[in-house]
Length: 125
Image (tube, rainbow, N blue to C red; front, side, top):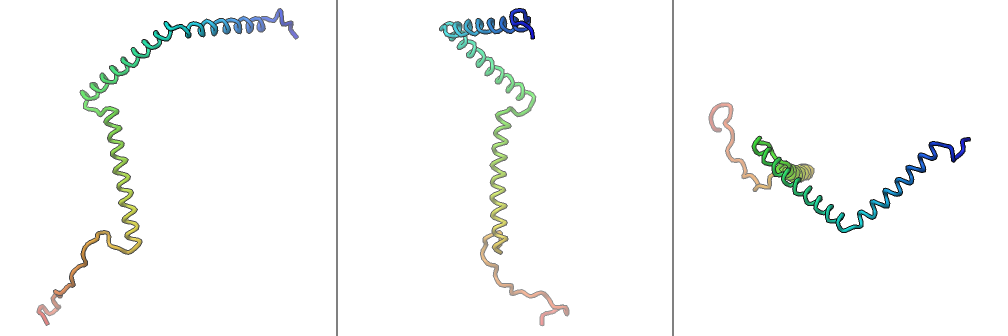
């Protein structure tokens, strides 16, 4: 077994641990200041503005390339889901009607058929 005092790995681990503690305390003190809060607020605002500008630019680019934007694709997907839902309802209604023996179209009953087809002789009897 190696001695803790002369072990280089143990010394390295101790040194790194102390550096980590020092950095954490420094960062904690820096984050408590109002200047840090203001700087982070400005950076966040700038990032949000840049993201909005990039989105607008990308939308214009897609429009010039005659391609749909993300918003348009989302709208198409929502409409398609609505249509699929309606088709599913129609399908279930049709299967219920066929199971009960009803006609798919609720229409008035057909009038009786009074005209007869001609007989094979060619004339009426």
